[in-house]
Amino acid sequence: MDARPHTDPGTHGESDDTMTVNVTIESKVVWRIIFAVLVVFGALWAIGEAQSLVALIGMSFFFSLALQP
Image 1 (cartoon, rainbow, N blue to C red):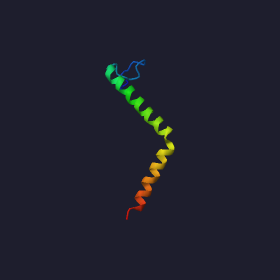
Image 2 (image 1 turned 180 degrees about the horizontal axis):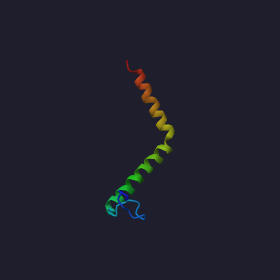
Image 3 (image 1 turned 60 degrees about the vertical axis):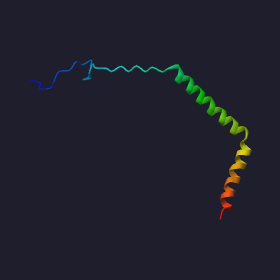
Image 4 (image 1 turned 90 degrees about the vertical axis):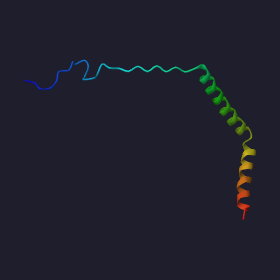
């Protein structure tokens, strides 16, 4: 006599209890995300356009630190 519990071969011992999660995203949140992405891309584009100026400012900042006693 088999002492193991009987399971249906189709379920492989898995439970039939499933949990469903519904996520609701408001349109206000979507527009904020779109705006944030556009601002980041705009800032990256502006820095790319002024790359030599940004490099010069960064270099002058480190030179100013080196000149401090």
